[in-house]
Length: 152
Image 1 (cartoon, rainbow, N blue to C red):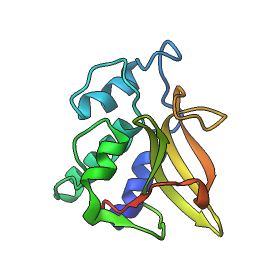
Image 2: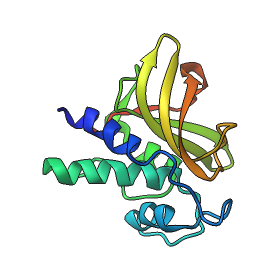
Image 3: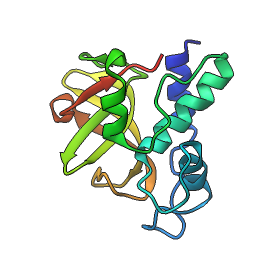
Image 4: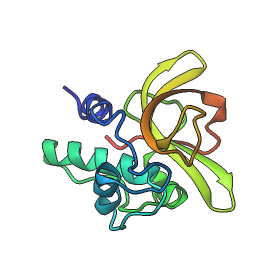
């Protein structure tokens, strides 16, 4: 299995991990994601979730994690120019910018025409950037206003 496919398997294994108590960026699952980027509980954790997943697969495959160790979505984007791609594929990381330093990210599971199926941390039923759970989402490719990073 390719590392990109294994990344999807890793992300899927985390679906339904959620904050506890809800809406406070805390809990055992969230803590392991935040700790992977050197943060304690209480921070937005979508980027930490993605980093943790890539780190787990990188370790399994004996390669270095190509992502920057950061909880900042836009910090990740700005520091990984060489990994950027325009056309998404399964296993890519999407990056969205909401202004004022706020962003959101997740892992592309499937590309279906003009949409992508994703797995995202710190989201909810409304596909918010500040949710409480790891969940599968569907997004229009055109809504991804920064782009995509290919970690493997």
